[in-house]
Amino acid sequence: MISLADLRGYAMALPDVVEQTHFRLPGFRVADRLLAHLEKGGAHAIVCVGQAAAGAAVADQPDVYEEVWRNGRIFVGLRVDLTRVTEERMRELVEQAWRNRAPKRLVAEYDGR
Image 1 (spheres, rainbow, N blue to C red):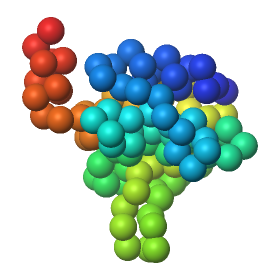
Image 2 (image 1 turned 180 degrees about the horizontal axis):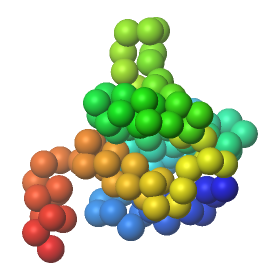
Image 3 (image 1 turned 45 degrees about the horizontal axis):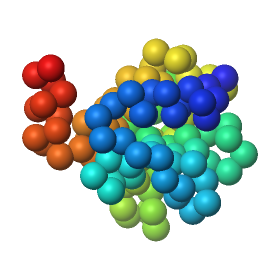
């Protein structure tokens, strides 16, 4: 199972990420934009990947992933079952969420390192 410490490690390894609570739960932000957070109970996290990436993940493994929508109209992100996802895949999803939320210049700097 992916723990909060694991999630923290993946997120904080990326440039300019800060840990900040989201509705009293652990969350991670870049440029004041949420990129990932735990859900109550700690068995699931939501990562703010793009809608196409979320759809592909759900189509591939519907027992691990679920799209999250607010009011059935606004795409929020991808809910991940932390008991079923691999460490490598979770690390990839956190980076995808970071790339989706970080300023373009920051992503370009990171890619050019």
